[in-house]
Image (cartoon, rainbow, N blue to C red; front, side, top):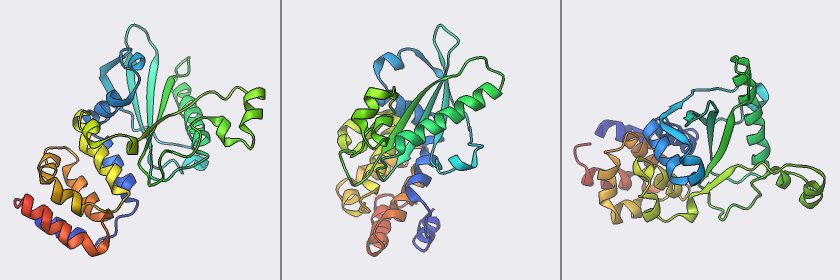
Length: 247
């Protein structure tokens, strides 16, 4: 592991935030803990969480491939045959058109579901996990905000469908630590946009040991090194190795 960490100093990680997001969210325990930590109680109590699974759904429409960081999960609903999907998208920069992109993906997912032989469209909850420098999130989370004049749109159209925004900047680290295995996953994404992990690691050495107990521990370390300012990467690596020399 020491050699792997050293090698990372000379590598450029493409889309480091999205890469780490996908690595962490492929662990179904992390996905479950994250969703349970943020979904409304009336949704959580309806789901049979033991059936939650990553669907590995992929977009088939060329024009939708810009949704590169999406993760789709399927879960049974208790006491009826409703098919429930949770779409989780990661954003490190705000986008005015995100509600439209979410709507595009929802329609594509519904089409795929019907093409598989189902007679009804599924229920979909769209979630955006946002960790960006600009906070609070500056744009609307419904389709009205994508129009030139939202007040006119609200009068003339029913575009009330909203996605769920999780702005990690609005949560303290203590709050995120209550989210089971998704704890450090969210904290690293929250801090990663600042490109400065060195002082955090020095102030919280136990967090490194805690991170090593997570399924995304190795990718978390690589993520930290990948987004850290270049002039601090070597010192960050040396600090991590002083805390966990077995690496």
